[in-house]
Image (cartoon, rainbow, N blue to C red; front, side, top):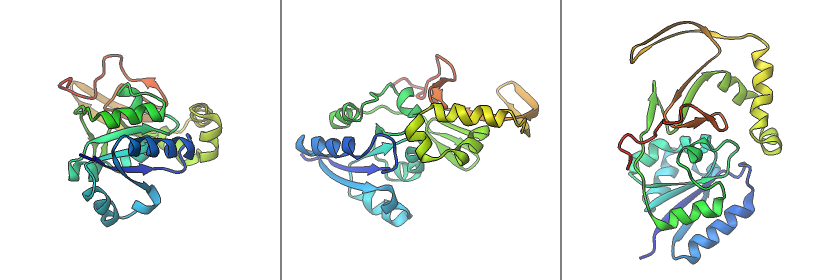
Length: 213
């Protein structure tokens, strides 16, 4: 039976169109029925729901931001997600120990093996791997796509050191799991996976799935 895959691609991701074209061809030649969407074509809820209603699985080619953007409809339609790492950091892919090569990641989509993972929530924001406030947001606002494509994760470090030099910060209050913190800090990160920020490790034993399945 042909498997219907909605392949969502961020055309501004760093890996380029060639990998995506080859991926689409290989998925199709293996018997999958692939419908490819650029993220600009899925800007409203109705368009996303139409695309997801016609699919048995979703494969997203992009970085962590692109993948997080589609969490709500993925959960709403109860579809398995295939991660095709085309971004700069690809921290969710690192956490899941997925191949960095998009074509190899595509083979996992075809294999149909699934792994149940946890989804984090900070206020009203759902996230797969990590959510932050402070420096990470400031860096994201100033980082251009050209810099990410040209410098990779080094682009994040470049802006990090510049912003740290300003000494900016904000007041924070954190309570939970025996932790009580009050003070002025520059960054808060809530991590659901092992890696964030372009490969930095939260904790070697951190798990994105509580059951291990």
